[in-house]
Image (tube, rainbow, N blue to C red; front, side):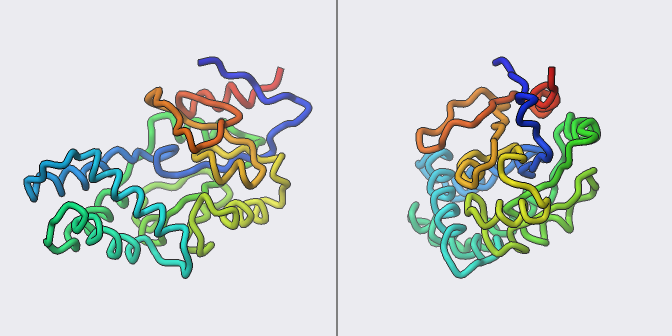
Length: 225
């Protein structure tokens, strides 16, 4: 995979990063569908439970009125169990979700890349609750961390990106978003997709401007000849 620099005629003035899966490891979320399958001896595949949960999660984040992730998980996880004919209490899986998503670690290259950005401004934009950010045991060299609970909307809703652009005081074409593609593209930002495991992009997701294997390639992408 080759990384072509951003043309000097249209330099990037700021980079907005997704948190989970981009700066922070998010691998343990698969523990929840695995636990559901194991606890109830389901014949369904872990992938089937994951898909059911993911679809309900996305749907719940895009409707009004706004709900926190704790409220959303308390609503959708009983529906996931019901889909697989499980009548058990969903509360332990709600708690497991927050155990997994509040005990996170940085990818090895995260801090070094953020520190190396220098004259390029940086911010974090995350579909997180205050509960998540309060649990982070690290700080990062960025101007601000903007979370969905503050904006009262979840990505890919354009309102989330509009708030970030307003905080930066920049136009969309001045900003590169590193992470999820759909909402950022619809908001007019350039997008770099971090594809760490070489997976195929979903057919309903537009092509990013750039595809990188990890954050270290971001510095090469931003380097001007």
